[in-house]
Length: 104
Image 1 (cartoon, rainbow, N blue to C red):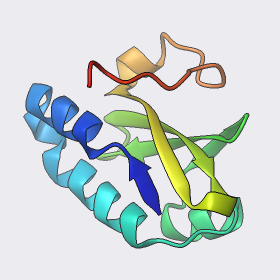
Image 2: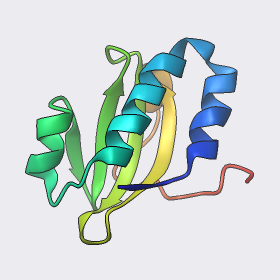
Image 3: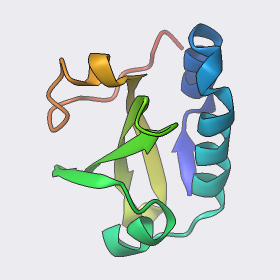
């Protein structure tokens, strides 16, 4: 899969060093995946949830962090919409988060 963007992950890792190993693992597994649909995604990350609008929630590091991605399976593209602590995640509407450039 093509991931937009690794810079977003690195920015978050710089702010939350404890997330580094888990996010790097997520990145590598996602990059090498070739998911055609949600069922195939669940085979890789079985705790992933769907909130509609092509948005998927990933539990990172035992649910300590949450990552929301917009995934367009037919073009093999994953847009990272949100990364945050579980507490930060609880304050947002996961189904309505939009892509932003994170200052890039």
